[in-house]
Image (cartoon, rainbow, N blue to C red; front, side, top):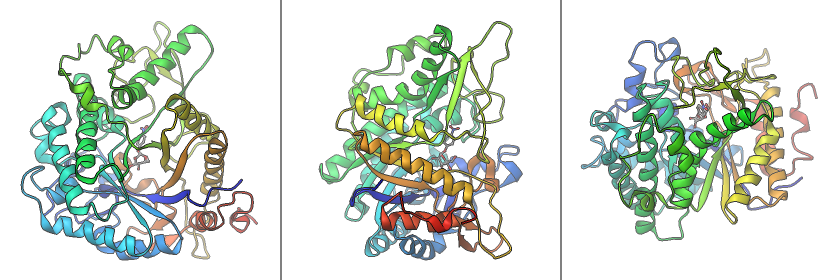
Length: 472
Ligand code: PNW
């Protein structure tokens, strides 16, 4: 099985997870700086203050990406680094940093794929209501326009939002993510204002850059199985599909607020905060729909007297699944990754094919896929991570099969380039194909990096990396 010559093999990171330099170069705090300073929110009290120090060490990281022969680097811009007040006066030092990074990537033949929002909202904007207020969506569009003007000549793909599901439901319903609020109504307001933010920003990018430069939106589409084929269990799975996926897909792809979503959430809100004309504004079909995929869930209808579950997404005890108390998430079945997530590669194939059938002609990219495992440095100084190699092989096979079945998937971005700050888990979970020693910040490519480089070179899943298979 071979990938086409123009299929993009890339890798991804996000500003707060790798940059560090939290108080340098004019950057102001984001909601994640605040979250990390709130006791009990992050394992081990970890913060992104230093992270992988990519702010200073990016030339080394660029060399690594180049050495692996990858075609694209997906990274995100720290909003509060370029606009310290969230809006208004830009910070030239912050802009210069990203210009230099993009320019150097291009010079090295690596496409910059830029995400404008990977969860690090300027704290000043959260203080004014964050994603619960529509002003934040307008501020985001202004920020997008500024970036288009400043970096437009250097960026190959513009992605508006990364996983608005996480920003809204983990940020405002379960509180596992910043800003750590646990208010169902706020979460649904955030859903709408994030959709609006995508729409307004996509329009601004298109106005500034024309239709040639692709605009992307990245969603973590949830694959949810009903435990049995009973009508109740099927309805439970559909509920998760609506609250998790339709909440974003329908406004952005179709210009519609899902009637099922309105029905499910009617005890929380009448959606009166959706103003006349908003859905038209949300309706900016991305040139590329980015799909982030890691694992799947199985659910069933809750029986009377049965406890509800949090849906496996954190430990505040409050579920991110607004208005889904009657849905029970089953414990995932092994082999699990270090996150406790199950592995179901074929679900990625089905998901890509399904999305393609629903939106014929839609270009897709897998903007994130990967896994955390408990990698150790072995006595030879190398990091042998056969579990990750197997995970990648299986999931890339699923992508190739989806392409064979007609899905228009044009790229794959391995999450992540580096071990990095894994949000509420801190540095405990390692997703990198390159190991980071958090004492010395030294980078060591794992076996998986060598395997991935091999694939990017040969494009052939049948012959890739036999040397890197465990024990071979
Ligand atoms: C994604 N969930 O996060 C993010 O885009 C990355 O920043 C992150 O490091 C990576 O996946 C690994 O976790 C997710 O609870 C976090 O369903 C949580 C969920 C999904 C994705």
